Length: 284
Length: 320
Image (cartoon, rainbow over all chains, first blue to last red; front, side):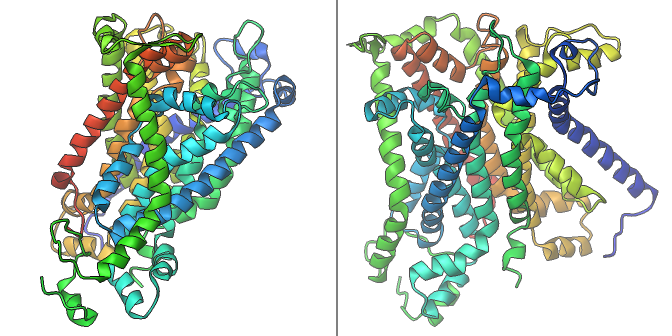
């Protein structure tokens, strides 16, 4: 590649870029490193000022205490279950809907799209009161059902449908038309011709719906009383002493543990998300 | 509209995706199958959404017209009294401006930061993958975890006081209300979400055709001109999406408020979403909380509606 801009100015620019990237990374990763460091400290060391960067003595028993103070393994399982269910439900609902809005465009699909869009912009706090009453009537209080059904239907599916629609819109219509001319049915065209081309967006949908369901806080806070049915985020807030003050070290240990599954999902999906649509087949 | 059914002949006329025009009554018969197919794809998602969402919205509006006794579950119709109460509630003179502060600050700064970081991370620099992963790290942490960690950091005699102390500054009242607390919240919220937005932007940036950029470069367009006239139009759908996600997301500064200050001192650090939770589930004032929820819904609807109407001016779709 012939670059016209080179020389000492270029070197300085590269230096500035690294500086900005390093500063931003420190702001974003620093708190997580601080969390891991604090998770190994004794409660006494936590309160030392100025704070120590690394624990003087590694207290691995903080991690054991997570499971003594709460049924954390169980709560973890609850979160994983909700995450998987929301994820699957979201993909199943949003892929065909996004395809229909972008490529099939039946009568009034633009109105349907606007209605669905309102779901992206519907804050959970706006509907939590009637949904709580609805969950009571359905006998869903103290169950995981509202965390799965309400979230998938109201929150993740609209976002996912929007993403899938945007993705399908960027495919040239010739793809579908060629497949139809070649005799592929509508369903086959969608699943076998178009869907593989939007895999990066599909990965984004998986990431975003996992991310959203794993992050749920208001919903379990409102729907669930039983400590055995809590999901991880609310459980994290319950690592307190008898006065309600946070047990910082145990809390940070639990928080560290809570990061692991999302990390796995991320490293599994990362290349799909980052590899752009162009690499997916349009250039071929 | 004498479109023949012969695809080979019709093809040149259909460079853009076929748009359904509600006005054209005499649609070719093949559209019937298209509609059935389209609706059957849409039905599960849309019907579920409309059933649950519609019920919730009608219900919350209905509740907002009542005074609800949480214990006996008795409802008394009070008309618009709850809405009148919002105007006279001195707490709301803090809650609403706080909410607006986050909406404006987070949506604008959040979108600009996402574009800037994505452009920076799209460079071919050594070790760029490390930074790409680093920027996504907060998104891997739950919002609650992020709020708890930051709560720990801004504790009196915490890490932040340690850092400011190293520069010779006195400990600051990070969480004791006022603008400083709102700024702390804004930083916590923005750093949490920026990674996801950057990933969306990066994906868009990488789908910008390289030959378009190369052609512009050959035509003598500088880096800024290429960015402004080629990259921005190409990624404008992603910018729109991130901006709208940020606008709506900024109404959801909830976990941070609940976990770091509980809205206090007084209501100094409270926002609308927290006030709804507080009134409904801590004070059991279901009717009043519902009226706040309706206001929240209308505010989000109005804002996103306006942005959506303006999108044609700023967003470039190849099919248009």
